Length: 401
Image 1 (cartoon, rainbow, N blue to C red):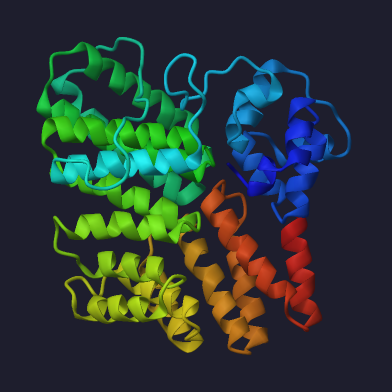
Image 2 (cartoon, helix red, strand yellow):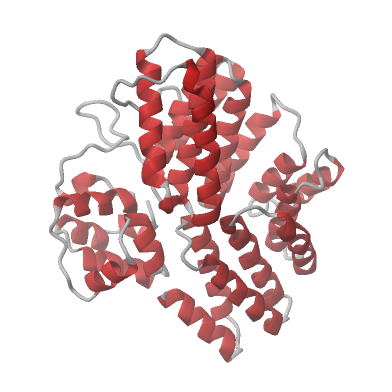
């Protein structure tokens, strides 16, 4: 779900009457920008603006796209439901909490051999039309995986979500028809979990979980421990980004039972612990500094995020200044430049904070990424708290964009 406001009675009434303008206004009142709405629903910002001004949405395909993009069941608008998370015919759509519990159960089963965490029971897996891909196509699948991820890094998940979903369906269709081939399964699982990440960044939460569960199932069947770990790691990162820190910590702790944590893993744990237990976060941060890979840009950036969460603003700025020159991709740059601006602002250096915030906003530009949008929104909220008029003006500009 794009924002919890969509689950309020007022939003449900608006969705039931297909009053999309009211739905979008409620989102904007909670700080969700027009750009974020446009990215999530696959519309242009001008289309969103017209709907906010009163244009009715009547086209079935567009209503379906809006439902899927906002993360609300199609049944809320009385549309034919093909929701990915109906647990079989006649069963209600799973809520986010059930999805989390079941994925944790699948993850522990794949990694440990039994469901010692979470809840037993599967998640619906991807299906696709019969395909003709075989072992000879493994290099193409791997190259396509790299290409899709590179496009997501540079332009955001929404820019490539359709292509990623289409290729994933083509791959899964071939895997379900062909006799099992380990190389094809491993390459296919890698592409599908990458497609899942892209769909997450496009705001398609249910599609993300379906792709991730499918990739995890394929990797488990192929005995591919690396992809199993990648799937669980990705789930933890998404939960952390969504603010579900306790669930994220469970997933990262699960990984630590079967693989020695490197600096990045300790950083992920520290980020997850920070809102729950500052002492635990500090302990994980200390382990990060002694672990393998402590100079990796990802690990250094996590030191910045954790330091910011713990109120050590100077350490946060120093970490981001070290990590950013070595970052690959515009989305990641936005996700670290925006919190660096927040760190400057909270440290009292408003002039530098505004300057860095302007740079973050320029980087975001036409980036179609819900993660980057969330980082810009957090930055805009911090700018709005300042007494400086330039900071407040920039905040208003970002929120109305």
